[in-house]
Image (cartoon, helix red, strand yellow):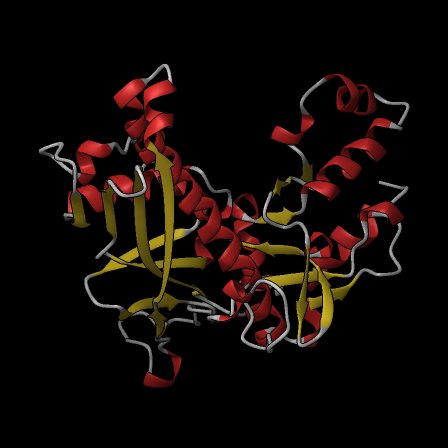
Length: 334
């Protein structure tokens, strides 16, 4: 998708109700659903760079193809390669099984009456709801884990395995870095880069290190302690917009934060980092997004109700490295 186009996207009550009647909504048309998703994607971090797929079916497959093997062989003039020397691309299908999530935002009549925007407040709310859905989708995609049991907090994260859980379950042990004893970013990030299979390192400029903002701030802080031009820049400039390690962009992810519980065990999300190629992460959406606006005169409340189905998968599960146990307060060296 064109990111400039996404950034210009708007979603208003006209997308919910072209006639602007008191009660309206339902399944959005493809164009309306696209507008809603554009705003949601723009409000995210990982999803903004990831691969987005939509389907009219709640469960669907998307193809993946790669050429990891050597193609060239010694040649003989006038002769074709023997069958054993021909290389076929590796193909496969990624199955996305979208899960339903719903939300409702009630707003009293008095809010509309007292607000300076008046009736225009509904448009502002529609835009804000689409943005909030984008943030929520990204958080659910990051933190979801089906190992949660009764009694674990935030049950919204138990519907499927998200980005962290897929890395924990599918990556080879060498691609999972225990950083609990690390005090240097060169140690942690260097280990992550070294753990990435070499066949994925030819796209160096496309790699991203997704990290919590706790680490973005700490990394910038330790860089600022250097008595160099880079240290001065780290103090005076907004380095977070171009923070990097060996040329690989370090991207702060707001939703990599907070504490949860999985199978009665505490989980600290601000201690995870993920090294991957952004479009290796696929967000799949069921196109039948439902947005409804209705007013209950008995309560004097207008509610905005939204429902969306989505899933997240790695196109190539091997193209990632997970860092865990990285406590920002332990890092004192760049």
